[in-house]
Length: 276
Image: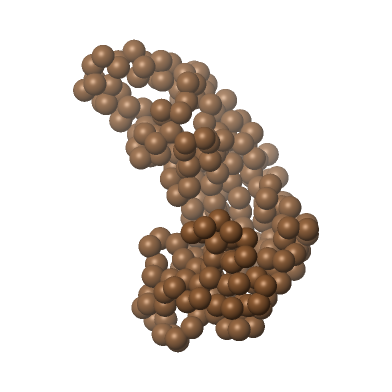
């Protein structure tokens, strides 16, 4: 929703995107676990009830959890959302992004169990980068739908859910953009919370300032443009988009500064516009 709002206000600055809402995943769970069997959603409810009953026997409970998660992942990644779903998705992708095979998309996840009080799900679930071709996107969607049932994601959220069967996954397809530099800007001083400074972290290539990269870190004064350099970008490699799909690591340029004065001026201008 926030990205959509930004796209409406700054259409030239936000890439094209398409959302598969929670309901698409929920509809999948109405399919039978196996031909003629229970709907997957009903089977899930029974499994969660079994796991809860096994609480006094931790070893048996752990075995039940492992069997449950394994079957969920295998079932979802091999499920067929149906002809109608694929037709609607194909048409929406062509309308939003263009002819099939002429672009890539990042297949990103969100769930209804993220950013809750005392809990953040950031990074728990899968993102598949720069997928090219409709068939590849379909495969990636199933993998992302299955990712909340990885052991780590399951354990992080269980303490916050009374009815854990109501975990729903939405997906954001974002068109790949071959940027030269990328990162994160926070419109506040992350140390003090004050609004007089911007906090910026950036690297060369795509996906900058994430996954433990050694990024260029700056504080930028919004009034006079003064820059405090906190750290140089010392990452030896940068990630680029591969035309056939996926990403590759190549040598970074090793320039002393990632952001130019022009870049900094643009960031200051954008930060000034955002509150309005």
